Image 1 (cartoon, rainbow, N blue to C red):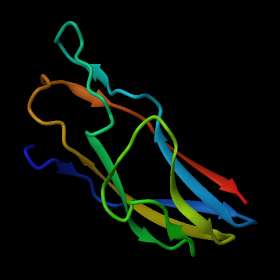
Image 2 (image 1 turned 180 degrees about the horizontal axis):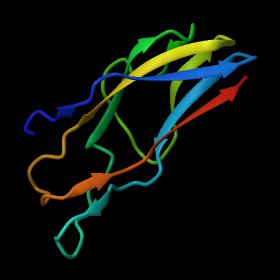
Image 3 (image 1 turned 90 degrees about the vertical axis):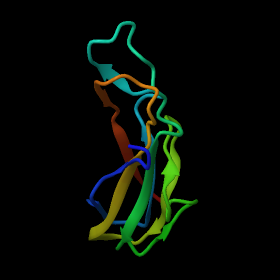
Image 4 (image 1 turned 60 degrees about the vertical axis):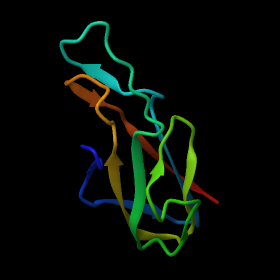
Length: 119
C-alpha cells in the first residue's frame, strides 16, 4: 500500500439531448469504517482517494486536473465540460487510494456521486 491501490477503468455513460457538464464528489468528507477498532478511526477522503478520467468519449473536455489523479472531496468538482448531446456519451474513470499505514485494518467505504447537468 506504500504506493496506493489503483482500480481498473470504470465506464460511465451519459444520455442527454443537450450539451452537458459532469461534476464529481463524495457523499461524505470521511470514509465509513467497519471493523473491530473502537473508537472507529476517521479517515478523510481528501488526500486519500484520487480519481482520473482515463478515457473521454463525450466530445467535451476533461475539466481541472482530472487528466491525472486528483483528490476527491465532499465538494463537487467539475469533471467533464461541454459534453456533446447524444445517447452514448461515455467516459471512463480510475481510482487510486493511498491511505498509508496509520489506519487499522477494516473496511473503509465512501460513495462517489456523479452529476450530469444540461447546459
